[in-house]
Image (cartoon, rainbow, N blue to C red; front, side):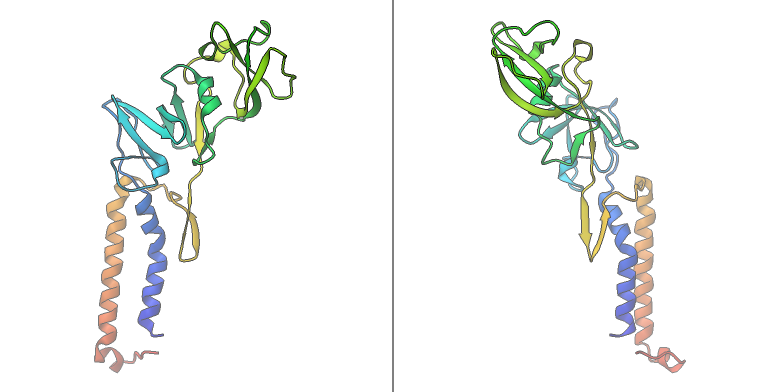
Length: 241
C-alpha cells in the first residue's frame, strides 16, 4: 500500500469523532416563546437528524414526548447537566402513569430509586391506614398501592406489581411529583470504535469551526496527493514506498 492510502486512512480516523459529534448536534429549538431549549440528544420531530427515541413535538406551546404503548406526556423541563427529564401528567393522575408507562423499550428510566409496589383493586375499603388513589377509584371500587410483600385482602384483586418511585400519598399527589426520568445515550459502532453519540457535548456555535477544520484537512489531503503525483516531488529525494 502506498503512502497516500495511509495518509487518507489516518485523516479518516482523526475526523471520525468530529463527524459523529456533528451528527449528534441539533440546533436549539423550543416550543413557544416561553419554552425551554431543546438540545441534543433531544430534537423536535420536524428536525430530520438525531435519534428518533429522543423526538419531541409541540402542542399549544407545550413540549410533548410520546411513549410507545402508552401515549403522550408533557415535558415540564429538561436538565442536561443531570440528565433529568421532568414530566407532567395533564390528567393529574401520576399513579395511572406509574401503572401503565412501560420504559423497557426506551432509553429512559426513572430518575429516582424505584421499589416494587402492587396495585390492588378492592370492592371494599381496606382502612384509613392505606390511602386509596382517588383518580383510579370509584364509588364501587377502591385502588391502592401497597408494598409487594403484603398479603392481599380477600376483598381485593391484584392489578399489577410495578417498580415505581413511591406508593400513593395524598401529600405527594400533584401532577408531576415523581415523574422524573433519566436517559442512557445509545452507542454507535463505527470502524471498530465504540463511543457515546454526544460524548463531546459541543455547543451549536462550534459547528462552523468543525466544518472549517474538516474542509481544511480535506484541502490539505488533496494538495498532498497532487504533490505526490508530481515528478519533481520524487526528484528532490522523496520516494514512494
